[in-house]
Amino acid sequence: MMKILREVRAIAKTTTILILVAVIVVAAVGGGIYFYSQMKPPKPTGALMVYGAIHEFEVGRICAAFQEETGIETKFLRMSMGELAVRVEAEAKRPLGDVVLGGASDRAEVMKAKGLLLQYRSPVAAEIDAAYHDKDGYWSGYYLGAIGIVVNTGKLATLKLPEPTSWKDLLDPRYKGEILSSNPATSGTALTIVATVLQLKGWDAGWEYIKALHKNVHHYESAGAAPAQRVGAGEFAIGLAFGHDIQKIILADYKVKLIYPEEGTGWEIGALSIIKNGPNPEAAKLFIDWMLGKKAGQLHSDISCRQSIRKDVTLPRGAIPLDKIKLIKYDYKWVSDNQDRILKEWEKMIAG
Image (cartoon, rainbow, N blue to C red; front, top):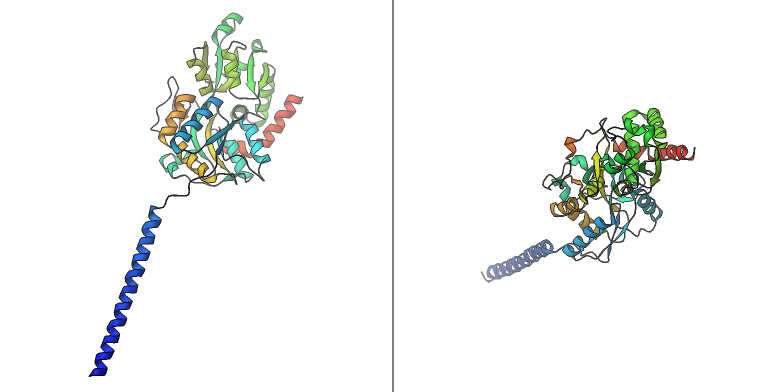
């Protein structure tokens, strides 16, 4: 009997120990899970560097708002999209920038193909139509824009010239020296203009048109918004630019008019992307998330006159919705695949 009692006590003691161990393990695991669930992602260290292809004032306002909201120091460098793309590639072994803000998606596609971008699928992108994002997650769209013709009504009246309403009208020899455009080697706007003509007319006929238009063009600016600004100032009668850049000149009370070509026009998806191996990837991801949100979308639309891809962002004052403009079936992937070919043909045309 005593032996049985000793064995019962031993079993009870062992059971108690096992129960205590189990309680401790459960508590530890549960506490660990709770602690992990309360942890925040590591706070980004160092300043965020934004490479901006939109107007310097716009990049500055956006970066200041992001810094104020997140506490992350944010710096920026503004260049035309073609120049930025060259810079990102030149810095590939040791990137100095974190984010590319703006520029058409076809340029982002080229950087993606060269392995210059970081794959990142923002959770905020789920709130936006998937058609406006790279299916592989290397860039996210945040605005839309269409190519337009800007005319200085006063200068046309002085020169006794009619307003052009189509691509065909721009070839009128009476406009010789009065048209301003931009250079596709440096400007994303200009690349969209050239690609629009090539997609409207076909490769051979498109280049014949561009050569004919070249006879009327005074010169080519490096920045895509410059033709609208200089036409607004009365230096030239006609310019080619994105409608939102023309709309800004109109809102500034310059006597200009925005015309969308009656044959149809090309358009862009403005892109956001993260530079691969940039110095501050966590801050870059936060910037993408923030920029795709409603608050930043409304800020950007208000200061730029661009149409947001978010349906809950109010259209800028005076802007024409894209569904009211005759748009061509613009293939940005074709543009990115043929960019080098297009630019080589352009250089040959200009040199010739």
